[in-house]
Length: 84
Image 1 (cartoon, rainbow, N blue to C red):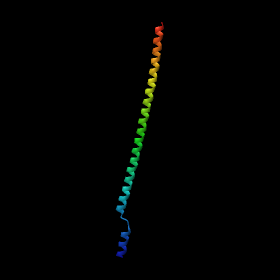
Image 2 (cartoon, rainbow, N blue to C red):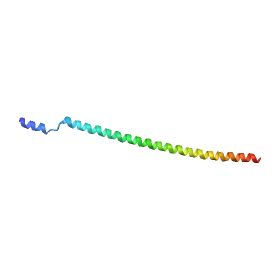
Image 3 (cartoon, one colour):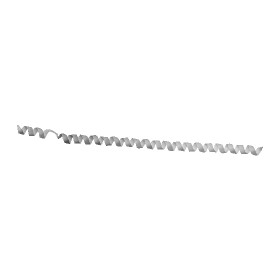
Image 4 (cartoon, rainbow, N blue to C red):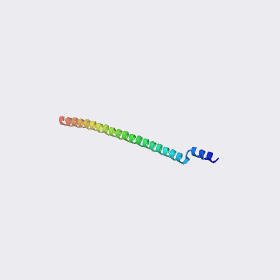
């Protein structure tokens, strides 16, 4: 009977090694998910930064247009004063 018991124990997988392997797989998947999350965060930050730059550019353009209109109104007022 001893030879049969030895055969069964040699056929059974090593539970410790199997659990160690499964643990490594889970940790690796965790790192992969974390890396994907960080990549998404970086992409969102980049898009937000680009949106802010575009908004600032639009504000500068609007300010420039307002300044031109104010200069025109001031020049017209000065011209009206001279005619009096």
